View 1 (cartoon, rainbow, N blue to C red):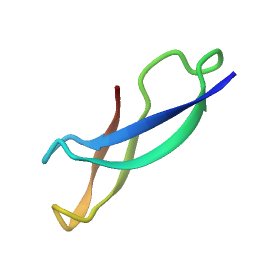
View 2 (cartoon, rainbow, N blue to C red):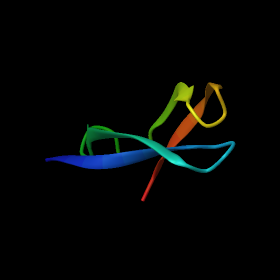
View 3 (spheres, one colour):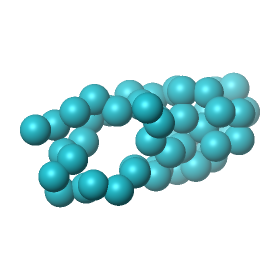
View 4 (tube, rainbow, N blue to C red):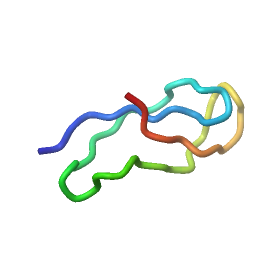
Amino acid sequence: MREIIHLGCMDCKRRNYSTTKNKRTTPNKLELKKYCRFCKTHTVHKETK
């Protein structure tokens, strides 16, 4: 039931991370604060397609 998702930076719009999530328990888009190597700072990363 777990699916691979990609996390993209909301500032520079680049996909930096990939992870898995269970779509049954978390149907909403995932938002995490992670380090962006392009912006060189911690920014909000949101699930992208």
